[in-house]
Amino acid sequence: MKPEENKARVLEFMDAFYRRGDLTSIERFIAPTFVDHTPYRGQAPGREGFIAYMRGLREMFAAAIPNFRGVVQQILAEGDLVSFRVTVEGERTGALFGLPASAGPLPITANVLVRMVDGQAVELWQEQNIQVAEDAATLQERQRLARDLHDSVTQSLFSVSMLARAAQTQHDQQAPRLGQTLERVASLAQQALVEMRALLFELRSDAIAEEGLSSALEKLVAAIGVRTELAIALHIPPDLRLSAQRTEAAFRIVQEALGNAAKHAEASCAEVTVTAGDHLLITVQDNGRGFDPAVIAGPAADGRSGGMGLRSMRERAQAAGLSLEVISTPGGGTLVRVVGPLD
Image (cartoon, rainbow, N blue to C red; front, side, top):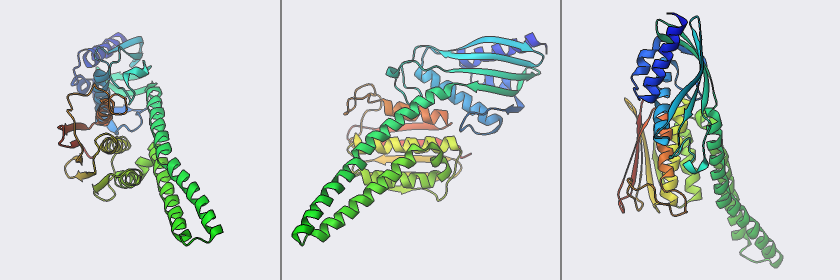
């Protein structure tokens, strides 16, 4: 095909996929032998991985920016190569990359170079700044961890300091309770150590993928058990490993669900079950006070948006090619259900 025909084919695809929402158009646009030379972090390999990533990305944009547009700029065609810049525009009304709409606009652009053969893309190179948005989401995650650090580890260390002073006084007075006080100091110090290790682990996304989902969830459950009074039962196959993107998405969804159970639902127990038969199935069930999933706009008990956690979970699921369902009724607890492929 001529350069101008390749250019027209790219514009036709962008219009169908982004403006009209024809998710099947990408199947026709991407050649069977397609190679993505710059896969996005966590993206599954191969043609199917690229297609799943692009569909998830579009659905995420549509959920957060109802009137979003994929605007193509500076498009040039030379031989079988087409280069262009695409920018996502529109007014954001929902959370995106874990950030609420109140966080303001996020610059989302990509410079793309694609090689065309017979009207289909066979090779692609791109430079995205979506990472900028995810970096902002990472900052928000670190701020959450800082709050947890203050609420748990700092309190534990303060208690250790006070008990150590009490032990010193008891030693000077040869009080018989010195042994009990020192045992309590050792227990609190060990608790602070467990909490610190867990928080440092949660801070490192690469550590979650390296550990694998089984080990990562075991550490998460142990950490939440130390920081809260929530009793958690975990059922998961040993050494279950998924792609890096799905591992982190599954981990963060379970983390959010358990955090909600402990902090907002006033649950006393929760059960996390992961099965890996023909597909991945994750359920998080708690016995908390429940809520109406249709009412997500009201403020939570801590004054923040009550729906931000749910939207964050849905965005993570969509980006990783997973489906998420939340079932809850006031007074009836909450069930979070995640389903997706294993590869």
